[in-house]
Image (cartoon, rainbow, N blue to C red):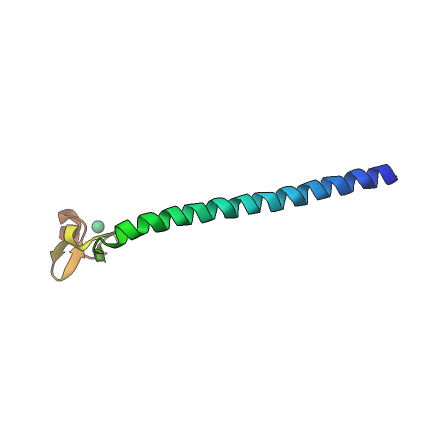
Length: 86
Ligand SMILES: [Zn+2]
């Protein structure tokens, strides 16, 4: 019986260690990823942010410069502008 308990305890210990190791590795890679994103973010942050508008028909978001403005509403396409509000 003692042998079985030892095996079970070793299994539990193995699983717990594996879990912590995995979360530790994930945390490390997350940090590396966020640092890389931050480094890239400084490059893209200098670009002016474009306003996003929502198509009044289908609700899709698109840059304001690509939207078709009609009757004071943004539309994603001529077709949706013709169809009108949903
Ligand atoms: Zn649309």
